[in-house]
Length: 375
Ligand SMILES: [Fe+2]
Image (tube, rainbow, N blue to C red):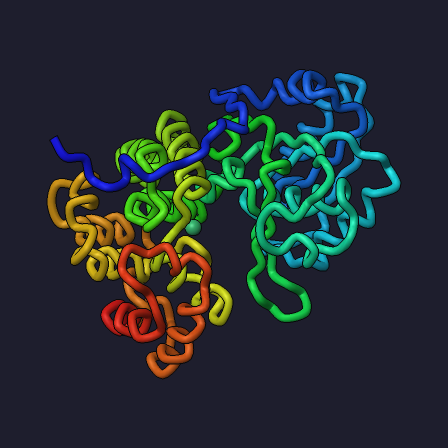
C-alpha cells in the first residue's frame, strides 16, 4: 500500500500543555497554580471577564492558596503592542513568578505578550517572529472562556503593532501555557451570537489545518478530532446555548483546533478574513464565515480527497448551511463590504502570513477571485 506524502513529512512534537478538562475544574486553579510554584501571580483578563465574575473568582482561588495577586485588565479585543507594553510596565515591579490568563483569545494573547516583557524585557517588536526570547519565560496557566481560537494550545501571540497597525505574531516555545483548564461552565455565559461566531472560527481551523502545505500525520489527528467534535456540537450549542455537553465538545474541539494550528498553520480563508477584520471591523468568526466555503471550493482542485475525509458530500454547501444556521454572514455583500473595496482587500490578503501555507499558491489575483465569488 502506498501512503500519501504527509506520512513521511517529518515533525518534532512534544505536548507542552497539560490539559485539565471538565465542568467545575476552574475551582482547581489555586491548587494547580501552587503546583507550578506560583507565589506572586499576575491575572490577565479583559474587562468583560471581570464583569462576568471570572477574574474575581480566579483571584479568590489564588489567594485561598496564599498567593499574592496582581491584575491587569487594560486592553481591548485585538490587543496592541502598546497595551501589552503597558501591562509589562505595570507588572515588572511585582516580581511576578506565574501568569494566569482568563478569557478569550485577546486575554490569552495579551498574557503571552506580557510574559515576553516580564521575562526578557525590551519591546514587543523584539519578539516579532518565532523563538526570539533568550531567557526562560514564566510559567502560565490558561483558562479560556470562549470556544474559538484555541489560543491556549498555541505558542504565538497575535498583536497589532501600535505604530503601523500591522498584525504581528510573537511566538516562543518557552512561552507555552504549562496548563490549560478547560471548563465548559465558563463558556456557557457567553452570548449566543458571540459563541456562534467563535465556534465557526474553531470549525474553520479544523478545515484549514487539514490541507495546508505544513500538515503532517500528527497535525491531522488534531484537525480531524476538532472537526468531529465541533461539527457535531455546533448546531446543538447554537440552538440551546445552555447545553453544557455541547459547550464541552466545542471547548475541547477548539483546543484541538488550536493544536492543529500550532502544528500545521492556517490557509487562505484566514488570509482573506484578516483584511475584512482590519479594514472593516468584522468580527473574526464572521469574517471567516464569508470566505471559508469559497476557499474550500477554490482549493478543491488540489485538496478534494482530504476534504472528503471530513464530510461525505458537498463540504462548501455544508459550511454555508452551518454559517446561516448560526446567523453569520455567508457572503461579503451581507457583511456590508463595498464591492469596489475588493481589489484593495485582495492586495492586503496576499500579504498575510497564513496564505503561504495554503495548498494552492495564494496571491492577490487568487484572493480577488475568492472575494468575487464570495460577494
Ligand atoms: Fe481563526
